[in-house]
Image 1 (cartoon, rainbow, N blue to C red):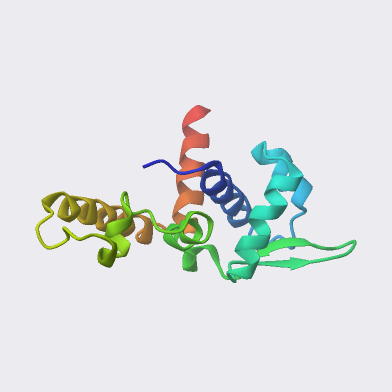
Image 2 (cartoon, rainbow, N blue to C red):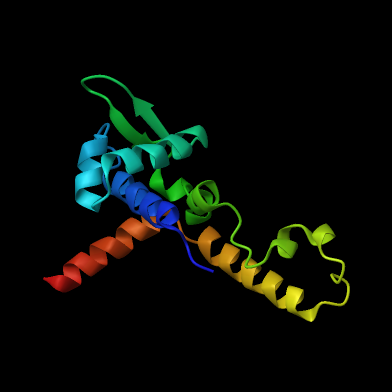
Length: 142
């Protein structure tokens, strides 16, 4: 299983917003420049995140994007779910009815455990945690 650019870039944008939390609305072009993401692609990602209630957008001269909640209240799992959907390695984990072998399939049990482990990790990490990790990495470079 791999995350798409949609998931990876969306998480980067959300970390950017989290690192500027409390500084007012952030321009899309500034996020795009800092994160190396095209404006158009980033706009599509932020629309999805806005529809999910994770970001707010304001139009106009003093517009831009802000997180809808404090970074500590937004879990990585929420962002990934909006941008990627389920992270189940196979379809039958989320929809067992599609598999005629579900009662006997030992590999489905493994795929389910993998999904549960991924979900648990993503749920345990907030955007605030990622901002702190980023700060530590920047400090260790100096």
